[in-house]
Length: 467
Image 1 (cartoon, one colour):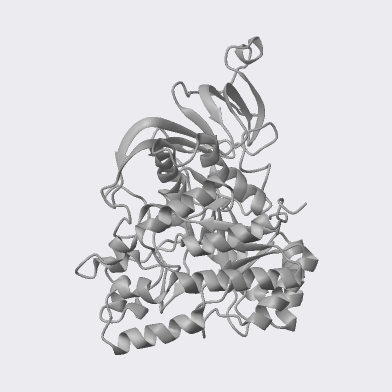
Image 2 (cartoon, helix red, strand yellow; image 1 turned 180 degrees about the horizontal axis):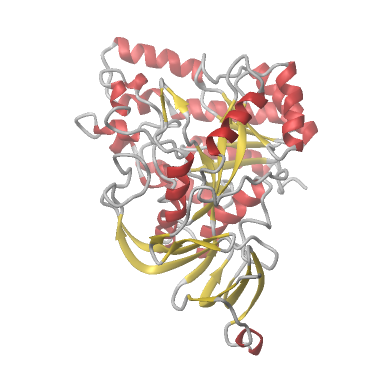
């Protein structure tokens, strides 16, 4: 039995165009679009009709940077795949790409298998994996080829966190050379971790222990230096490069220079860098710990360069780096020593709404909102056009978005499994109303109708910006 759903009367917004159209869905796929007043659309019948008059009809969001059930600093991020993907659905995100972790001394396969076990039958929306490479050697380099063949086509390396995830320049070069051959994409956490550790040690020795010093020691110049170095290593290797969570004007400048040369270098930023700043890290009574993440929040004057980078396509993607730790019981592990505060913030539920607020505020256009939140991550990570757009043949991952609804973000009303909101009290215009995941309503008029296990694992192709 085929189930047909019809979405009528909305403004369909994709990265490519805006059009008043009806959307016809059969089972899990979009089968047709037609102008709402056309005779063609008038003849459509369906088992369920959704009235989207006065609303936007947009593709489901793709959050290409999440950390569910992620080990860090002796604890684990507070969202499981079940709670995290439920919160994603509430926020209009219908696909996440999470990071499977290779433990040092173990095979990539062991890490990937563990993440499959954590997520299997738990997810409310679709999901895929990147692979964190924390031990680059001949064996793991060979495994990279196998993983690309299986649809795990991106690999994250760290220039930060010596002794945990850190790779030196030689290891990074070898991994980049391998990806140049197998079609994979290297994702880089670009901060000079060796130098940062010296500054951390000096700060603590001088009694500078509060959360705000987390931002002060992780200097913008050390992000820019690492970004520059990663770009040059990628040039030597002949490999594409994706810099994660870009936070500072100087790092954007390095990406701009590289892209002006025509290099296959890409950048991502996150809502926390666009909407928050070091003012939050400096909040009294240890409240600043809520905002400890890496790269860190920067002074407010960096925000305009990030918006400019997004408008000019020097930054292509906005992801969340969702890695929540509760203020009580997790963040407070770092009382008296900022270096022991687990690094990470909640955000998977807020991204689509916050980026619509950026449209309201005039930072980006509606189509650019959909590009950076849906289409570009889909293309970057080999999911397009199955995901990231509204077109015949695409998965029916669709959000009905009310651009006029007003809301106040708060931990009291969010669905992430964390005891604070990074955007507590922020008033915004626009809200996700109904969410379809492969044609099934997982959020229906602000009522959660999804379930753990609905979400499917999605093998990915290679980066579609490189063909």
